[in-house]
Length: 140
Image (cartoon, rainbow, N blue to C red):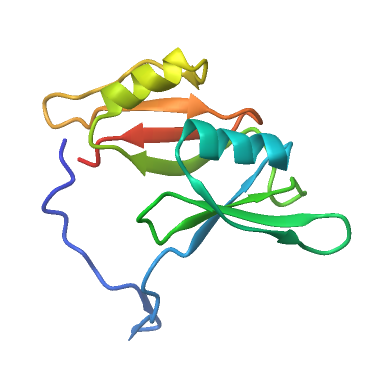
């Protein structure tokens, strides 16, 4: 099943078009911020865009893929945001098979490749050290 050709509808609230233009950031709770920074930068190729003190004894850390406007904030777990779960975050790759092989060779916990034919996107899931699950797919 391909998602191409889906009709886009402007978001509305009470009949008014909302002035929301982009996803700015996704917050992901991690058990250890330094381990998460290492994983996202050394294993996935993100860059650190913010690493500053935030409140008492905590830090605000954001990472971003080169060329992307969306950042991921690596935050401490809270009652509202728990570590070790599926995030719903999907990363796009032009070659998920190659990314899968490279991550697997570097001991990243990756699932099996899924799809890749009959209009089904080629994808796989991976886990970062806190147990956070992300999806990588070819963007179909």
